[in-house]
Length: 351
Figure 1: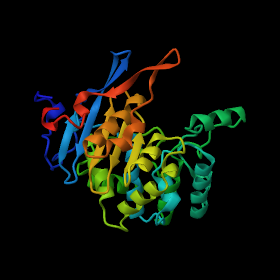
Figure 2: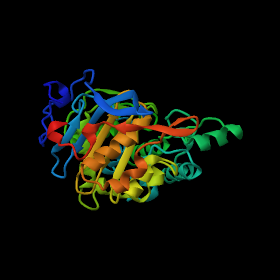
Figure 3: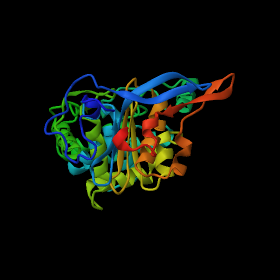
Figure 4: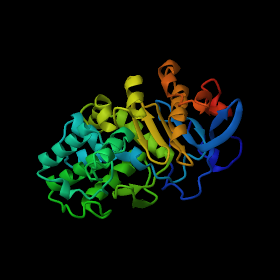
């Protein structure tokens, strides 16, 4: 990118966060992936990508990494840190991983959410997330065949909501309005979001599950996850990172790409979010964050894998994340390919 637009406004190598909140504007996304069928570019996914080195500096960027955007569930590790700081009585393990989860609604997810509510002395009736069917299509189809209906426990954010209720209860805060942005719990979450991202929140709205959703920048999201993975052992940040890495299926599901990515790359912490968001960080602070502009999920992992290769992850560990092939007559005839600028062989200075 050679213009002076926001697509390259944050100079590569800059370690400093923006002085104020991210600007609310239409993001100036750039092409990040090509949909190639039979050797012809059939479609283009636009988006933004940021790659941070271990020193926190921007090593590579594409698109608009400083505009305000909603990280959706990719912010859950930060929310989990905020709850631990506020007194959530979990040292680690499966329940802490579920706290940061967008789970698939498999039975072990539901059992863990019930266990969290039981430990808090609460029930599913206390949850205020929206009822839903399980996120995993295999599990969801089974529910439909069995005549089961949507539930708050099956909704993919039920672990986060159970943890929010538990945190509110141990502090003596009200439970019925725990999703109000003015509630002490949500104020504590907002403070942690601003601390770890290094910038004020631009806007607050409501996420799909009903919880407050904070608008930050893609750069801020990558910075926050890097700070979580580099935190000292025993801190809330390190406890969240350890729990998610050790129990990746609790944080996602047995058939989810983000769990497979964490298993494939030693020490990697990853989190996905609706509308094409992916963030990942390594223990030394190297981090990547991706936003696919149209929200389509098929480009999310291939682009993130290319960004990880660019930051030094062995490409051999990432071959399984190149994306599903495009089919023609049932046979592979193409693929979703990250743009050439994401190739590790391409100098960031000329991307």
